[in-house]
Image 1: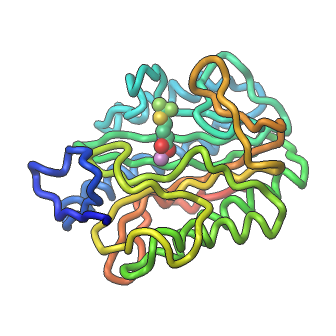
Image 2 (image 1 turned 120 degrees about the horizontal axis):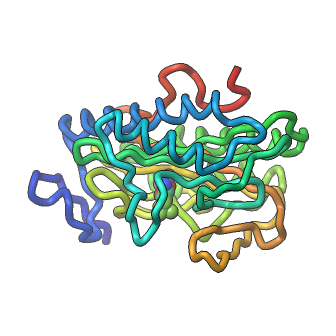
Image 3 (image 1 turned 90 degrees about the vertical axis):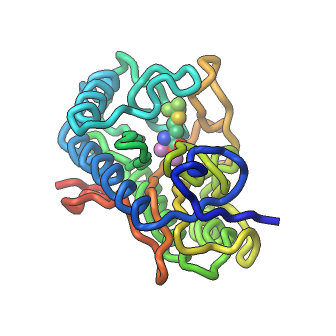
Length: 275
Ligand code: MF3
Ligand code: CO
Ligand code: CO
């Protein structure tokens, strides 16, 4: 049985398995955190270039986050020591910023989560480095289409499984693999909270969606098979078959008639090409 809880100042910070239902104050907090996150990714669009190192990008993310009055939620999270995740080509997610330089033809995901006034804005986008092969661009386009198709399912009365079903249908019709090992998640005052938002599911299954729920949708779609493995650093997830992988993520809130996208780009840079 799914349990829901209208949050109060006292209950909203506990991870107790309930799905939290937020009021106007929560929406306002998430809007601010989400918009800071979106502005940081907007800035990345200009900075993702051949030759830049991922730790330089991480430094810019950290500085913009702090300048915005927030802290990077990933910094110190379960021993993670960077301000964002940067996942290149066959890296599925949780790529660690390093002295590695981006090169022409790479596809890159940057995932940021500023924690602003107690609220988490969790979002990621794909970036194309220089000239990218058509099949990689297609993967990126379809992955964005998957995210938005998932979001389109969101409204009170729908079921959580409707989201994954919409995503899986699009991805598998192209013979792409939908990653099962990582999910979207509830969030708010907590970074990762109930429910788990799976990206492959059956329509009409799972908990009912209700106004006031906050969650991320963040499909990871592989050009090859769905299977991933974790590298020895304990973080970096890669495709087992070394095929390319793409991901987009939005943080959303459920309203009376659909979804509010907290992390939508204020300047229209939601997906490449960013011109
Ligand atoms: N931002 C990621 C997510 O979408 C989580 C990153 S946790 C980290 O849930 F520690 F790897 F940074
Ligand atoms: Co997330
Ligand atoms: Co994220």
